[in-house]
Image 1 (cartoon, rainbow, N blue to C red):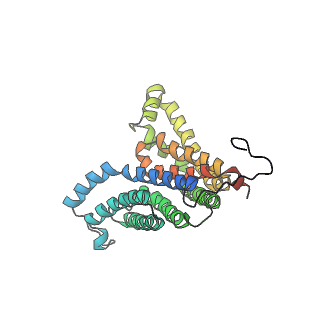
Image 2 (tube, rainbow, N blue to C red):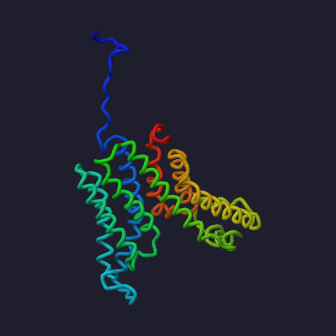
Length: 279
């Protein structure tokens, strides 16, 4: 009957979303956007550093000539940004996969180049880029909900690994006592959190706050590193996005270059539907 509701004997065919669309595409895009944001966060640093590197050549026998070249670090950095943009606007699966592979290559070079090897930005970005490359190779092939379930698991496993790595480096008496954070942040760091604390608390109270602040960081990173990968997708996504965002927001805005990509990667878990979490 025209305009009426379908009876119980009638069937309504609802086609599943095609591979690479819907939630799968949204998850891919949010990871790419935050990956781009993190790398672009380094723009002003790279612009200044690029001028210095081209004026003063630093040579070390540890690095081969091409990993000392200022031109190499310039073009692989720009290449990484370009690969993300082309991967987003590319309409064909092979274009996205190719751009993903180029991005991994560029970030790997940045991670071992003399000018950038000591920057954690490229370590976290490389892990997220590897995840992205894998994801692009499966977007047009795998069943969407199963792909998201596996993608979310890999995302929180990467997040847990990075948090645990950060925690292990802080398992020292100096961090547990708060000495390191007190010297780095609480003494004179010009940042809104620490400016507020110095203006409102005396030196003794500030030192106590630094101790408990440091212990909170060590405990949260340790517990999250060991257990976040075991959480259901949406719980892990909420925990990961909150932790990675808060580390930069409450410590140093420059850390967003390291952490934006992890915020986006953690958010993949939000796209997993409830019916998939029970599998």
